[in-house]
Image 1 (tube, rainbow, N blue to C red):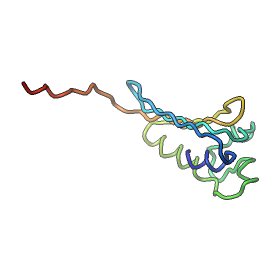
Image 2: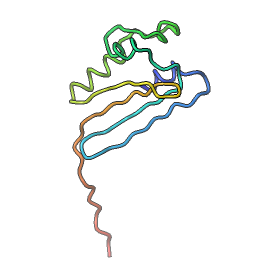
Image 3: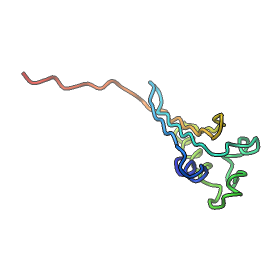
Amino acid sequence: LIENAAHYSPPGTRIAVRAWIDPGALHLSVIDQGEGLTGEDLRQLFTPLFRGRAGRLHGGGTGMGLAITRGLLAAEGGRATAENHPPHGARFSIRLPAETRAIRMPAEAP
């Protein structure tokens, strides 16, 4: 996701990466400042061999990266999503189920 954001964002723009956990999952969000996603891109983005409008214009890639990402996450009960992030750019997010538990700190020595 980070590599795609870097590839499709204008040089010198920011890419925001956020990660957090909640009681049942690990979340990761990557927000770029690229052109955003067309309606067709949003419908087919995770389809094997699909290359969106920006991919066809910028070249490179096989159209497999996002499909593989979604497949690997699905195998573990996770999911990958994409949406436009106004005023420009896109947000790609993953959610991976994960068991969480409290951290037990060792008692301090006297």
